[in-house]
Amino acid sequence: MKVLELAGKLRTDAGKKATKKLRSEGLVPCVINSKDGNVNFSIPTVDLRPLLFTPHVYLLAINVEGTVYNAILKSVQNHVVTDEVLHIDFIKVTDDKKVEIEVPVTLEGFAEGVKAGGKLTLVQRKLKVRALKQYLPDIININVESLKLGASLKIRELSFDNIELLNPGNSVVAAIRLTRAAKGAMAAAATK
Image 1 (cartoon, rainbow, N blue to C red):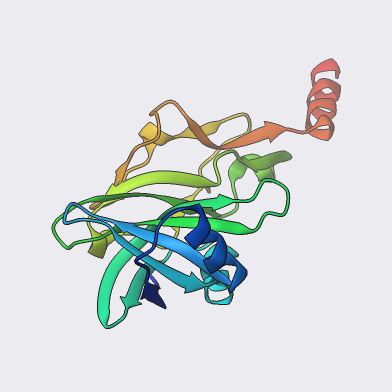
Image 2: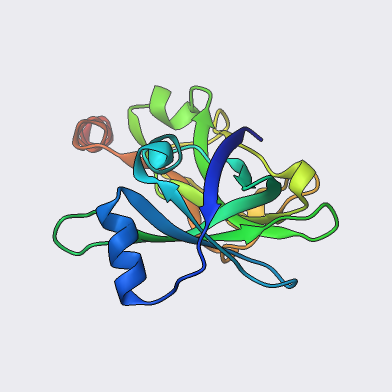
């Protein structure tokens, strides 16, 4: 998994007034949640762009005034109208505790159903997984070469080493849909 390094400053003041002042200075209030206690800090908005405006998932090394915390992004709160980042929550990651995150999905291969005139559809762009830090993937690659026309690929049909998929087993990840042209060709072939 890719590692992104961020640097922040501890914040001692809490409340509306303090967070409003931070935002006016171009900083985003953040917190790292862990069983040992929460760490409240702030990060410049500009430094968060590589983390927020990407489809990739990162393991974060957050340096808060000399102490480095390994974490992952939990949630981002945005302003309703301006879409400005108001607050970010991180979760502390350790080597011995499994982490739950959503990972992007990519499809590999030229499906048999596409060769027959169907259209490949990616239904779920991200899958929720649980794994130890060292096994967390950047992307989940799924091979669809054997997928036939009208068939679908479900969560229960997938398995990966050291990774547990948390989505419901009957959820469809990818499917080959019949196009109008394929339906017309099938109907024309049936009438002959």
